[in-house]
Image 1: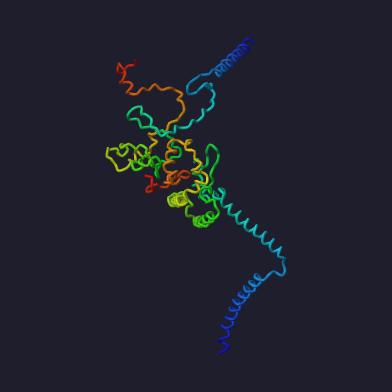
Image 2 (image 1 turned 90 degrees about the vertical axis):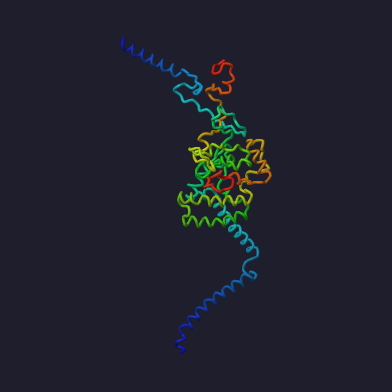
Amino acid sequence: MMNRFGIALLAFAVAAGASSLTAQTVTSGLRGPAPLNDEGPAPPILPNRNTAEREVRNYPEQPPVIPHTIDGYQIDLNGNKCLSCHARARTAESQAPMVSITHFMDRDGQFLASISPRRFFCTECHVPQSTANPPVSNDFTDIDTLLSRSSPGGRR
Amino acid sequence: MTTTADGPNTALKTKRGFIARSWDFALELWRVLTRPSSVFALGTLVLAGFVAGVIFWGGFNTALEITNTEKFCTGCHEMKDNVFAELKSTIHFSNRSGVRATCPDCHVPHNWTDKIARKMQASKEVWGKIFGTINTREKFQDHRLELAAHEWARFKANDSLECRNCHSADSMDITKQSPRASVAHQRFLFTKEKTCIDCHKGIAHQLPDMRGVPGWQ
């Protein structure tokens, strides 16, 4: 009798514990308020930024990001849609920035007449920008901001 | 003498007889056709002519329109597995408003005389179908530049008419376009310096090898 009561009590405790776990919400920037054992609704896919204005680079070596949409642009062995505007010979008509001269270099530093094959696939480094708000904030500080601080390297 | 000449002579006679009989028949038919009808009433003839005309013309046009559907085009695996499969991921097949272009919208002129002219050209495509010119993916890839060049030339020659059947330059609201598109359309489209196909190649199907094509690297 006592034993059976103990099992029932245990079962109740387990059920209560499980329900309180499922009811618990963990609010994280990425998950949102969805409980841990639920998928939660998928956030809407936001459109990409679509302007002609260049974005500032965060550091000098950063591949410039693409400020416009590139939906349906074919970049393969047959052709490269990006180069229809960004190739050296096309920039007068398109007024687009020319691909960097570094892209004409092979891996030995020799300049070729046209884009080096290893730099042909633009989207390996250059990416379009989503208009979504990042769920996790970023406290990256660029070098100019760091250098202009009164005590270099330290935070004021 | 007469017996030896008899054989070929009779053969010639029956041959001439056949030609002569055919000629007589044709002459008689012509006489009947040019003579006023003595059996049927004028009303019957007019009505019968009208009904026959409706049936023949209607039948011809219906058959023509059947060949002008996406179902007909994709009836061949050459179209279904290559160009139609490629179209599906583009904006002319799936987009926000659900308005879509089918094969003939872009590849067959809409007004009648041009449509018939294009349909006559398409007899070459029937030839290609019969002899399997592009019946594998590899063969299709080998011919892609040639096939695309035909379409580019056609669009260039008719000022991208099939684009403009839906996309009117007059109805374009450039304030609703992205800055890049609005600048490019004002500079090149509105000044008639370029036509749609000059910039918008490969928007509905994959591109062939673009080396040597103007504006491409």
